[in-house]
Image (cartoon, rainbow, N blue to C red; front, side):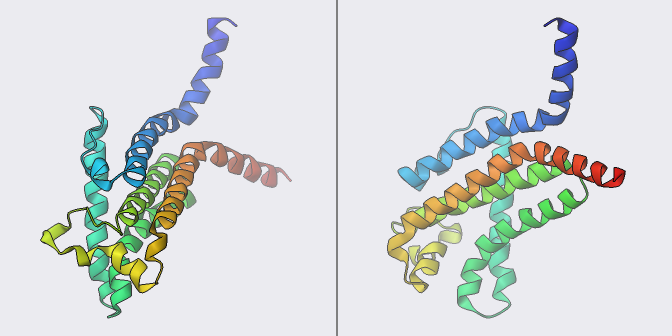
Length: 203
């Protein structure tokens, strides 16, 4: 295979999958981090040091997710149902990137769709780590709230499933990983969708 042939094959691939290649590394970083929090302790995830360059990206997405999480408690608190108020933080941090994905996918903005799925996967992994802390409540809460204010302690206790906190957190972790993989593979699905539309138009 000569250089020209290699370029002809490599350029279209990189043009389509350049962001997917980046997401492979970004996904590995957070999967490793949150795996440690589930397998060992959430404080390992909190103190986890990311590589230079990604640390700023993580800082932005982590704090943005936290702000949205806290806003979710206020927004869903309007309904006056305590359970929904507590659950609202996790609901909103998952719902918002999902809605962003739907809008961007319908608009055929693939990179934005991939970024949305990465954010959604992050939100699930973040929630999984929080859920894994439900029994020990080692995570310091915002505003120096008491351990009894821990979201998943209250959510799982109200549902009488606190003893299953580990299983639930691992299920959430797997969902997050699946979403990250989907985000990486999204250009392939987009290409198939375009080919299907073109075929329908020709028919």
